[in-house]
Length: 407
Image (tube, rainbow, N blue to C red; front, side, top):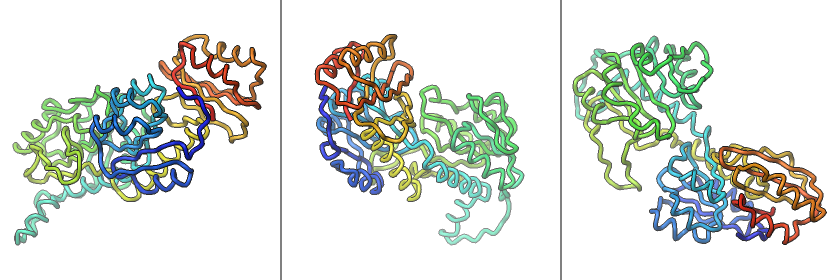
């Protein structure tokens, strides 16, 4: 590994998938070499691109695989300019000492607003009304059209999105129940359910907001739809692989489910213009959107600024606040002269070994910050003098060493 101190202008950043221009502007003004592309790339193309890249920015369609990470000797960090990180092999990132950052909060409001809009649209049958009007049919009937006030909303997944949805839905007069595998604080008058089955039996509207962990694959299928109350509405703006769409179509066609809104799909087109194929097409009172829950200009701008800021803080200071995979170290204001960041295997005795090397060379430590997370350890050391080459070489040779950087 290269241990030379590298100024920003020597670091190359590759941003894929039309990441907001604010990210490009921010990183360019910080001095980095930035290349932006408007599309996702295949694994083979990514391997080729990453040969000389120090920082990679993606959204949800580019798969950062173990093969791609192994072919990226200079890669320091990956920024997911979205909420999910299941498109990144986190275990492989850990093995190579690559920090991963995302935007867990930035598009929360945009997703919640779309959910509210879709619930109201489904309750009023607006998609069918609009279609009929475009066909020249005037149907002013109120049959099957309802207010959302007084309806019972069931939220599956009470994280950042689910909890904010809970508050807004309650302000519209909905009664809220939620189910989460974690112990989450109920907001407002929301009621916690002890099981998914309990929730499905009491609510009129079910909306999914679970994360992308593999445990959630196939979470909602035939048994869950059958347990829902007749005439219920169903929404999924979380992950495509969570829902059995064949079962959903069957329950809509039978009239058991009165309407649905789906924003995510098991197989989605990789780029603009590719055909969209789904067995949910053509169904009445079903809203299909192309994975745009968080796609507002406000959200994309905020995501661009947020993730770019996290990447810069890591490159310039070693800060890992809100990193997905490395121990989160929140550093005091930057007052150091020389800084070494050290990613290592989380095994006993590493810090003692590191500090003994410093002591043997008469180096004084002005500040030191340590964190561990699973199999990964991260140490930041500040000193008043530069790090001698033989100390760096000795650290690089330690069995626990994953990555060293001198800032």
